[in-house]
Image (tube, rainbow, N blue to C red; front, top):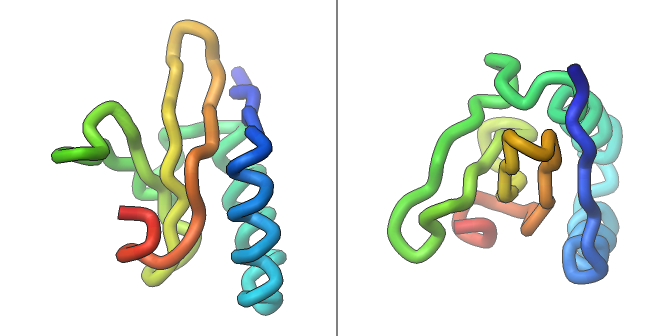
Length: 91
């Protein structure tokens, strides 16, 4: 069963900046979102919970360097995208 990806205005702004700086990652980014939408727990995403000031959020990997942070609502089957960028930018 698929999840609904929720793109907020603030996320879309971050996303535009990210894709402008990294046009070589557009295809990989889109593939990551497609997998996330179909199966948030797919092993290739390396979904993991965040801690500290980001407790309550999760992150998935686009590749070894770039991540997407998100809020996962299992009951509603919604994924609220929060940020995208390098490990240090997202965390």
